[in-house]
Length: 340
Ligand code: BMA
Image (cartoon, rainbow, N blue to C red; front, side):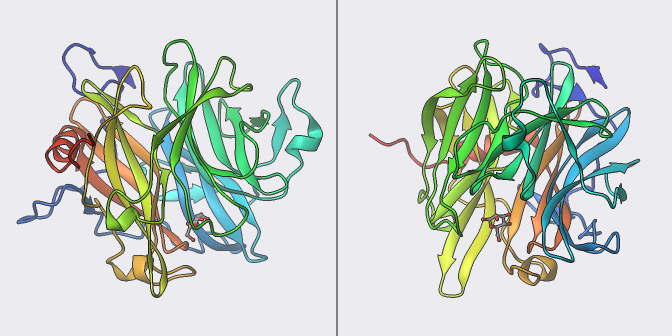
């Protein structure tokens, strides 16, 4: 990875020339489009896997690595490390990640109950992992790794109940910053996105409300942050999921918004339409039908190419694509009018 000159590139971040990629289908004007090879990760990549979905991938040593949600054939929600040469074909460790306690982390906090919906981000000198961690109900687990072989667990960031903890890829105003979605202990029928700050990745505070459910029909019930926010010259591009309650249950889609670079609890623009909603057979049918759930984005700052990994029907993993500069333009031109 080489850093592209900040002055000349739209995206602030590394060049990733081997980012997974498929061109927009001929004749399409959609802001995002799916990989025709979807689902790129089947549910049963190893024998003990019931399903592999809602997972995170990052560039790693010129190739790719990630942390994957694998629900086992005993239906325990677990995290597994994985590796890939091209970001499309993956090898997953069949053994779940076991965490070593980082210094000063209380073992009663890190006792394993369940773990799901990971996100991974490179900050400063290591890869941080956040996930939905079982601790008297779901809350935000935090850990780090240098090599995707050994993993170190820190204190949970927030009190239960909370889900969708997503770190920004750098400190802002001297603090680590995390989006999250306070929730309940079940299939939460509500939820807004909040932001919290920390000086040390352990103590979190200065909580602020970022945005709420209900701006559009596809996100009428609840929303939650998705991939790591993407830094651009015009603000942080966030891709987030939204849930509609239909007469047949929840429908998970995803859309996008732009947050202020310096005060990311301020929303610059939020698109009305969704980007991707369940439409393909592998999104419509599975263990939980009608779910598109994004957890990771890989961006090549040299070309603005964006690859988003998303869980399909709580069963498999898919890829979809877009251009970051186009998406920022799309968010602004399809935005809700400012309130006031
Ligand atoms: C949410 C989370 C996700 C899941 C989604 C749809 O509450 O549990 O992991 O993909 O429900 O079942």
